[in-house]
Image 1 (tube, rainbow, N blue to C red):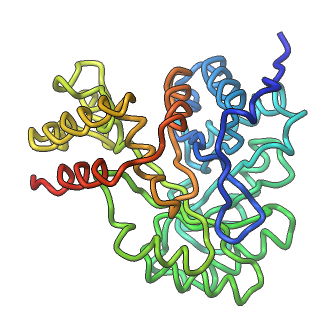
Image 2 (image 1 turned 30 degrees about the vertical axis):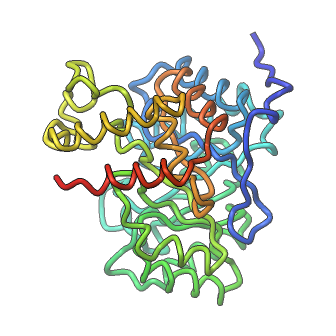
Length: 332
């Protein structure tokens, strides 16, 4: 059956301006880090993308190494894009990244001009695209001159292979330097993608203020702390959970009794707000408009529906903010 997008899709979502740019992003964006590689049925990935777009999620976020195996998320997304989404390509923001290990040898990692331009060419072929909307440098390179990396980002925009560029995982001091180099080159930095959640708040020290000062948007990844900020672990660690599987992204050692106690207390506040903990955690990251969008992952369409449902109750009272802060300040 041929996919037909829901005609009401733009009634559901809140769209927020990305820094000083002309682009607006959905408050909820879909990350294709997991559940879109070759280990997932393509039909499952297709259902997730359909449901996301039907709910007004217009931004799909990839990277060269997403899978597993690396490259397979882009390839599978490209297949679904060609088969189902081509009529709506111009309604989508598609992003990809390069910066982590992608192929063998000295040119398949980090931030050289050679790696970034080659990687984007490969990504475009895998997805069957002429250009991506956003191309990110995925992480800082301690050895390659920052100017070389930023000139490569400027170059792909001038080539027409990317409309905008962004940074990911850059600390504030390096982000400032990179943003200013891009300004001088004439290709402004659109967006920064940091890890940010109730349990990982390093961006609050100076990065978010820097981005506001510079007119750069932000999109938070891992806003649910790898699943900790959901109702999954309220009663301990289920045998079929990510934490029990030996995942390097969330393991049982991270789920200390102190952490679980805070999760349960936060859940009580969420219930008093009439929402799930995951919904409150997403709303909290978006709470003061310093963050443009949150990136969610999903293995079920219900998770996407829950995330978008957060928009029905995304505001906090002063008392709620103070209660949440008191819980987050409790020591390990």
